[in-house]
Image 1: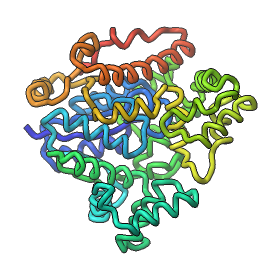
Image 2 (image 1 turned 180 degrees about the vertical axis):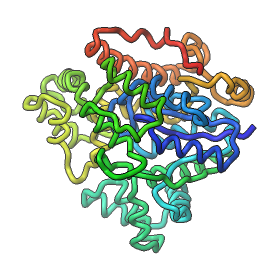
Image 3 (image 1 turned 60 degrees about the horizontal axis):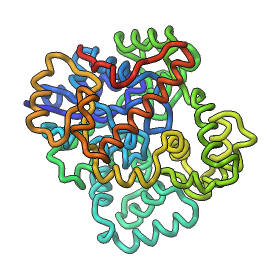
Image 4 (image 1 turned 90 degrees about the horizontal axis):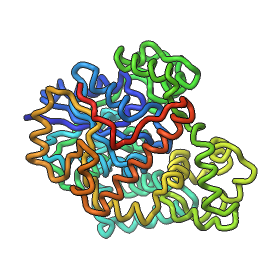
Amino acid sequence: MKTVGIIAEFNPFHRGHEYLIREARRLTAADYVIIVMSGDFVQRGSIALLSKYRRAEMALTEPLCADLVLELPVLYASGSAEYFAEGGVSLLNGLGCVDTLIFGTETDQIDSLQRAAAFYADPPESEPSLFRETLRSLSRQGVPFPKARMEAYLAVSGEGDAVREILQSPNNILSIEYMKAILRSQSRMQPLPITRIGQGHLDSSPGADFSVLSASSIRRSVLEGTIPERAMPDSARAILREEMKEGRITFDRDLDLLLHDRLLSLTAFGERPEALSRYLDVDPDLANRTARSLAALSSFQELFSSLKTRQIPEARLRRALLHILLDITKEKAEGWRKLGSPYAKILGFRREAAPLLTEIRRQGKIPLLSRLSQAESLLGDNAFHMLKADLHATALRDMILAEKTGKTQGSEYSRKILKI
């Protein structure tokens, strides 16, 4: 049985994702494709456009695409590139049957990515003194950590300016983290990068002349009430159209009241800003500036704009605010991270993939959750609390939808996994 894994968000599923999966099948002759997918919140620190179940359905319905979709725990789904890759690789490792990890890159110079991954994967005590000194110097100057780490690596590796450009690309950064996670975990999986096609990852211009549009571009079109016809496979586009018609689409602006209330309750109207620094990605300076800004601001976007600085990348700031909303503290994150991904929660699968589920149950090292009612008896206390954070994230999105549509979404415990 040949099985490949892909770690993704599908926010939403589009032609580029379809191409990646079909290329994975072609290049590996895979019998099955497993997707580890973010739930209702995603890595850029945002709420997902559609629910995790509808996004899973997009990937499962399209021919020659996914066979099984599992949920990436929210700690990793809402984390940095390192967290995202680490959590996804841990989950795939835990299944015991995945041969290859597939991911998209924005370069065909894979050797450069592999060298960087191997360097970053080494333990801290083996880092050259020049690397540590350069990293400390740049950090003191206010250079964001990802950029400081890259420049420190370039200083000791002797790689040229062309490699600097490669290492700054979002998909390439994530590719390096995937390969680093594979090396650190001594995984049996082999990495297989596939060069992405079409529009750049962060390009959000819907009118751009590309045969494959980015998810950012599609989300911008949806915000304006349209769907780029060529951007998505037919079945995925039909699902998105249905969700738009029913009002089940969510944007960051839908977080405004929840986030504002959460921040006010934590800071007692600005009296205890230090309370915010307990949360993942929130340092004392950001905590203080957030508390000072609350009284004059009324929206997530206004708060975000007031807090953004050259030293704090946009995505990290969004993640920091999201971690406050989702109650993901540094203490919780540290404890959960030691577990890796300790369960595999099924969102959906194709019926013909039943032999794959049997193999996972036979070979896997972590529980495969098909019913939440089983979870508490299968998981240890810490792992169960980690799962409850996933359920809390979904409940928040469901509460937003209930307000928007006037219809409750039902308990996560009562939802049936998709069988297509």
